[in-house]
Image (cartoon, rainbow, N blue to C red; front, side, top):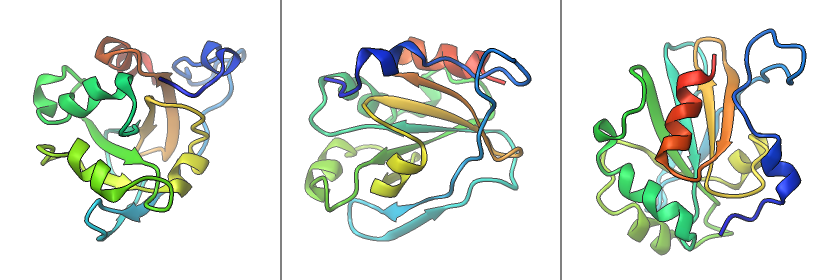
Length: 160
C-alpha cells in the first residue's frame, strides 16, 4: 500500500520542458548506497546519454510486487529505447537487507541500491514511485506513482 497522501499523488505528472504551469525540471542527484549484500554502490548521474528510471520500491508493498518481477526481465517491459533502470529501496538502517535480497532475487541486469538519502534527494514520500532522469541534462524530467507498468511506461514516453 502506498504511503503518500492524495494531495501528493494528484500532482504527479511528466514535467514538460519550458511549461509555465508545471515546475521546472530539477537537478538530479547521484545515488549512493549499498547493495543488499552490503557492497558500496555509487551511481553518478550526468555526463552520459539516455534516460534513467529510478524505481523506489519496498519489500512489503503489494503494489511493488509487479515491479520487482518486471525487473527480472527488463527487455520485456516495453520501456522506450535508451531508458535504463535502477531499483532503490530504503537503506539498511530502515529496511532488512535480507528482505531486499529476497525481493531482488532473479534481478541481474538492474542495480538494486539501498539508500535512505536517495529517497530524500528525490523527494519520495510513498511507493512504488518512479522518477525519470535525463542523464545528459542531469535533470529530473518526470515522476509518477506506479499503479502498474502501463503508468510507468506512459510517463517515460511523454516526459521530455
